[in-house]
Image 1 (tube, rainbow, N blue to C red):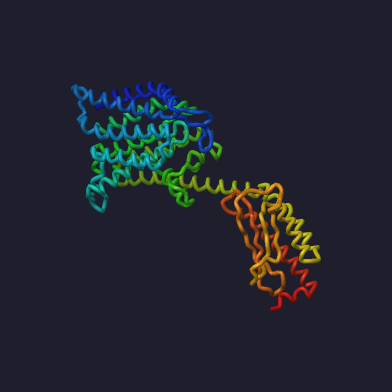
Image 2: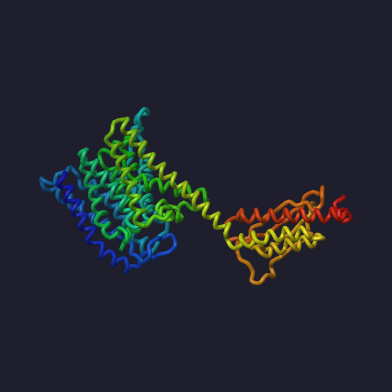
Length: 495
């Protein structure tokens, strides 16, 4: 088995590395390139579709293994027929990924293709048929339930790798460590199929990493990221050990890929809370956050490599340990993931504080803050209600407002209104309405001051609302003082 694994590793490494330059040329010719800008962090146009080189190197290695099985030294017990449908699913994923890199198929079409590829792998023997749970016993699943669980498993792996593919060498490096861990476990347990499938993947990725590590000259693209996720997910269910479907055996690949899986879960939760489509793109992934905190591109990748290595060590412990050792490995993996989650939470707080500070120092908020003391002084000196409203209008002139009006209690028409429609140049932004209760006569039922505010934010910034509240309070005190000083004006407060 070791000799066959070494041959497969060498073939995968050399073929993948040799094919990257021609694939790079092909990607440019097809227009499969990534331009900088937006969520992308690279600084120059870079070809994608590098997964073609990885997939070809992987396929060549498996072909050599099948050919070697005809000779005595190459006997491993691997049946070529068992790899046919597994390879067919991989080919489907590569074709769809290449089309997406060249033409952008969209998330829904890719999901359909992923489900189809997972179904092909299921028919080839990559399936979850039983699950042995400690203390609860063994569960046997019907064919339909088994198919659904298998498809969810493989599709989850595909999208986890796809989502973390955001920095040079990140996805390919994470997959390399995970595949290397699976290879070590397979060799130590004598599982030839798992050893060949994983060592071929690890070395094909390693050959690609020569070109993909920062600064990358080619990207995996969806061709590569979806292929890597498919192979990891499907191959985990094809070996004899994984077919036992014990909790520990299924947890090994999950722990090893804990980083991309947890990042995917965080992304889904983040988008659900923000009421955004689950498949929409954003810049909230863990690697983006490391960059925003000041780490260089390369240091961010190396940091995430370190987290992956820790998780892979925990996966090894779960694979070989006794009950308490498996528990310790799970605790170690959980602590690593909790650390990532805590980091993500601290980052969200840091970003929120940064945004709040930016709002406090924004030109519109700064202008409103500077105009507020003048309003308080002028309103305090005004000798009439009209004079107080005039001082409030000067405050509104300083901010991003569209209109303002005062509507007394029980009346539909405003008794005072300010309109910025004739302002030159007109302000632009999303309109928000803020409403404040005001009593202009002592004992009167409160009326309402309504202010139409313009902002480029989804909601009215709280800083603006607070400053407006202070301004409206100053108006209320000033007009009440005027009316108390001139009692005849209070007659309108008597029903």
